[in-house]
Length: 225
Image 1: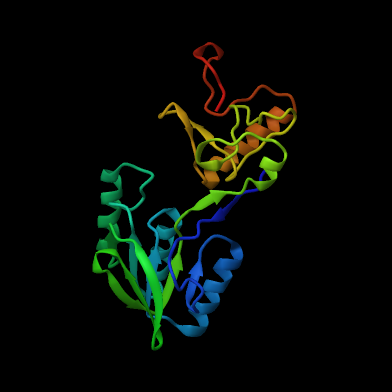
Image 2 (image 1 turned 90 degrees about the horizontal axis):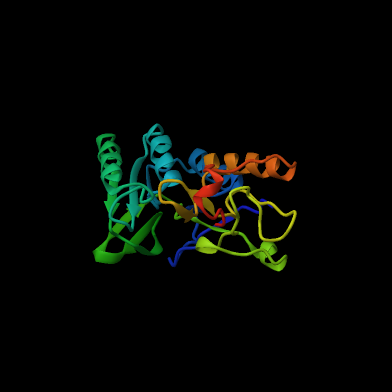
């Protein structure tokens, strides 16, 4: 089972306005490209300072678009240590990208030909283009209907062989939780590199091969996630 994830829907009014695009699927990327080539925006605001939210400033600055990244956490890349996030922030700013931390965008409104964003702490900015990339949530409706156990952050709970609690059903990708070797506990990591490894383990396990993600000796304790 690899049902993936759906983009998180932030509580922001105005997400349906023209010039506001989510960033999750290939179709989303095509829509953004169409906007860039037909509307020639001069400025862009990216809501979300995660992996996708930081990929886009790099691409947009090559088009000479002024970019602002808005992240509600204290640093960008909140999945890593804040000290590393601070290094990334400085590097972004060294390339002319404005980074705003600790602000939650609350509303987007049309202001003439531009879009006006407002948020906490009196935040306000006008821009030509808004990209929204605030994370994903696992798609587990099918899994739950089949009786699969759900674990961390609503993702499918697995053991290290990528097996669910239902015999002969394995899962992988953005719909599942995964074992974090450093934290020594399950977590949710909806990343392509993680999904690739999970898929390999699930395939090998389903074919009868003894395979584990972040393998540890059997006598180290329970494998259940």
